[in-house]
Amino acid sequence: MHHKALVLFSGGQDSATCLAWALDRYDHVETIGFDYGQRHRVELDCRQRVFEGLRNEFPHWAAKLGQDHMLDLGLLGQISDTALTDEKAISFAQGGLPNTFVPGRNLLFFTFAAAIAYRRGISVLVGGMCETDYSGYPDCRDDTLKALQVTLGLGLDQRFVIETPLMWIDKARTWQLTEQLGGTGLVELLRLQSHSCYLGDHSTLHAWGYGCGSCPACELRAKGWAGYKSPSRA
Ligand code: ZN
Image 1 (cartoon, rainbow, N blue to C red):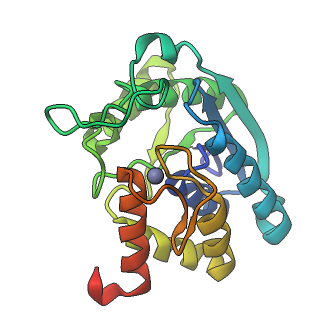
Image 2 (image 1 turned 30 degrees about the vertical axis):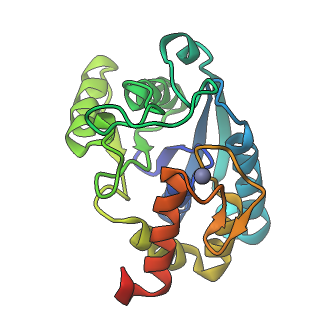
């Protein structure tokens, strides 16, 4: 069962890199995405373009790419009050968490993923969470996800492995990993089609990809790209 993986794939840079990582490593890879009334649908559109690019340009991976499971989690809008789901500006609350934070989001995502994986005969769950340059999201922490792995295994009475290949690397090394996995073709696909910007800007093209250029997600992505392009400055 450990040859099949289910990847949490949002259309962002990190999860797109994880999808490539899983395609490189497992025989069969399925994906799961969540529609929870994001302020902008652009991430979900980017998701489709990344799929298209992978299918067209990486035939050895296309053969492994299985079903995509899209879940409507509109109910998250009822329990969150954040910049992702309404028109408030992004701000940073006390404690440094951006108000884009949906409390415990990754716990919910992995639990839904495990329920689907259980039915699909998949035991490996892959996510792009990262402690290295994260925004302080406690549900991205390695310890959180290790605890969740144990919880899911007990609660579903089936062993699950949660893989987080980006946990200990920064955004510059994420681009390096992308290049190792799929060469400059994959770097170019993810540069142009993966989405990070909190404001949903996918019209302004920068060296590092599309985005507003000034939100925290764009700043992080720009810094990572600069570090990837000139490692001495990182
Ligand atoms: Zn932005």
